[in-house]
Image 1 (cartoon, rainbow, N blue to C red):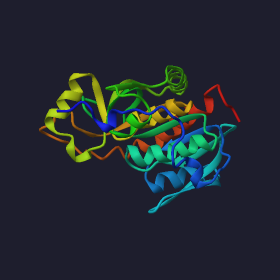
Image 2 (cartoon, one colour; image 1 turned 90 degrees about the vertical axis):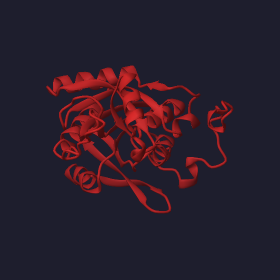
Image 3 (cartoon, helix red, strand yellow; image 1 turned 120 degrees about the vertical axis):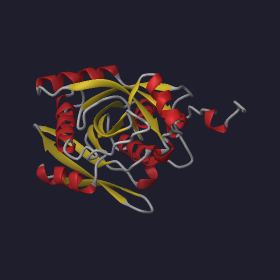
Image 4 (tube, rainbow, N blue to C red; image 1 turned 60 degrees about the vertical axis):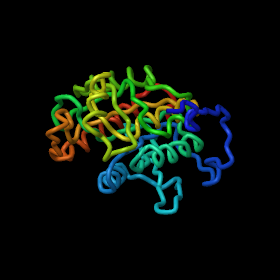
Amino acid sequence: MSTNLFLLEHDANPNAVVSPAANGHFQIPAKCLFLLADDDHFNQFVKRYHGTKIAHFDTINKVAIIYRVTYHQTTLAVAQAPLGAPAATMLLDALIYDGARTVMAVGSCGALVTLPENQLLLVASAIRDEGTSFHYLPAANTIELDQSVRDSMALSLAKRRLAATTVMTWTTDGFFRETVTKTQRAQSVGASVVEMECAALAACARFRGANFGQLLYTADSLANPTDYETRNWGKDGIDTAIEATATCLAAYPDHSN
């Protein structure tokens, strides 16, 4: 197989033919909560904290609305991330352009080891088994998430007496290509869970100079690749995970509003 792959030809130029400026320019709070959640839970959170619309991001199939909320006396931007690394990172890049400096994401994941459903997990590193991150950072198998953000999140969770295990995640573009061989390979290098955005989001944030952290909660289980369990898709853990991440973000010491 050729190693001279177009995907691996990294260009460090921060400017591109099309930039986030094409969507317009908005001023959003420096702390941004990035929810990988369904419409109902996103809207419920925004309504619960009396969110006001402050920006939008337009694509051909959906207009993403960004809100401002006051959470624990701290002003946060709140955005709903679309599914998958390319779309989620496209929105994140725009949010950073519009002023986000510390971004904390929250979403579900599939367990690759024995983990109970709705378990909170703090991401330490991610396997870059997707294409998006390679447009932001040179080729590598993994990316380490920001240590200072992770430490701050761990402290905030501990103060709330919320147990969160630190994990490596496997970020993949192919939901229906999580084969037995690839699943076992991810397990063998230390990945405890699998999802579809983290590595790309972390790479984008690092390239653009923003702080990034991610909290996950367990949904389905691939711990036994020959006996897949959907469980209840982590539905009972969504609210707890969102509130926990928002608390971590509000407590983060930099860029307070």
